[in-house]
Amino acid sequence: MSGIFGVISKSDCTKTLFYGVDYHSHLGTEYGGMVVLGDEFKRQIHNISQTQFKSKFYEDHQHMKGNKGIGVISDYDEQPIYLNSKFGAFCIVTAGLIENKSKLKDALFQKGISFSEVCPGGGINTTELIAKIISTGKSLVDGIERMFDLIEGSCTLLILTKEGIYAARDRRGYTPLVVGEKDGEYAVASESSSLLNLDFKLTKYIDSGEILFLTGKGMEVKRKAANDKQICSFLWIYTGFPASHYEDINVEQVRERCGAALAKRDSGIPVDVVAGIPDSGIAHAIGYANEAQKPYRRPLIKYTPGYGRSYTPPDQETRDLVATMKLLPVNDIIKGNSLVILDDSIVRGTQLKNYTVKKLWNAGAEAVHIRLACPPLMYPCKFCLSTRSINELAARKAIRALEGNDKEDVSEYLDESSDKYAQMIEWIRKDINVTTLKYQTIDDMVAAIGLPKEKLCTYCWSGQCPPKQNACKKDIHKKCACSA
Image (cartoon, rainbow, N blue to C red):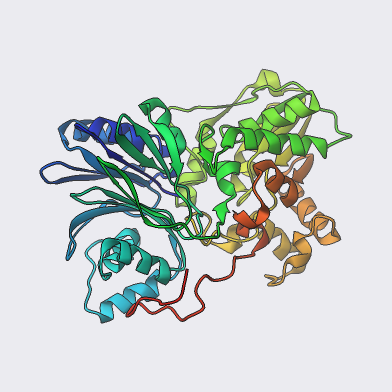
């Protein structure tokens, strides 16, 4: 994931932009960036992998002046990108994942278009690629639509021009984008929670495929919304901030409903303490404890000042370091108790096994029962940057061990009532060394979110993608003519 934020102000917007971007820090760990437009573009990008956004940009934001700006917390690429195009100069920030960027890069090379930015490992910068594709359109709006036609994956973006800010949500709505307003000023953000303390009132959930143009005079719809939606279910389960709303559904309440659903399916185990692995497991645990009428306590405390999410960093060494250092056990709560521990998911399983569970056993737990708020993750995400290797996933490791090879058809393991599913869960339980292990069913997860299943992306669990929007062969040398 990445988080993007923009603001149009009647006066200097830099302070609002600074804090608005910072409220997206949970969505990325690699780079932060801001650009403000006054008499000219003032842009700054920093590596934030070893520090917080606020500390890196505190001095910068005091010297940047302008009445409109955009910023980003990026999970991979350096952003914002500046481009001086036939439409005039603009800056762009993006969130999403482009699966076919190598093909798109080669097609642009054939047209004589070059790239100046690189991402870690020497590849092209995805945001620059998006900017170059957009610049081949007849206008910025046409370029955005053209980009939507060409990419495989998703891209939500903000473009800053001298006239205003273009805000476009990806065609399927995988990633969120909202607009807030106060006294004729506008903010646009990935996370609605970023608007709250900045006194913006949430006025619009930008719809899938919709393109808006924000100026000091208001909002103008440049492209109407698409008819379909596939918003990422994992936003509510894990990645989203608890105070945020997506499609007018609050994250914290969804997590409480997930926990309650797990409790309803649980019976026959002695429970002394219900707890959540902080931070994202907490609301799931509260929902479980309330439903089961068992005490909620905190046997694991997160050292918040120094460590962020262990899921977000791109390399395993950093993920392991964060997992080791951020959670502190409270031995007096753990010792001699049967613990039900709620977490959002098991991705690789290594952190839960090697750090969290080990701390509980070492502190004298009587029993450790793990409950997960979503089904087993079976497929790496195709639409947002997260787990990139199918071989990393705990469920796939279990299937490989049980079958003796990498099984292509895993449909038997997707059925919660099947023997294969039970064998997979038992293998994972033994591997992470816990007393019992249960996952959420996909139907209970969807019910907890409260949207129709067809409006949610469940690819990570089911492997099912929506039908392709364009029937024709995509060609970067000409705009796709079919409807999207």
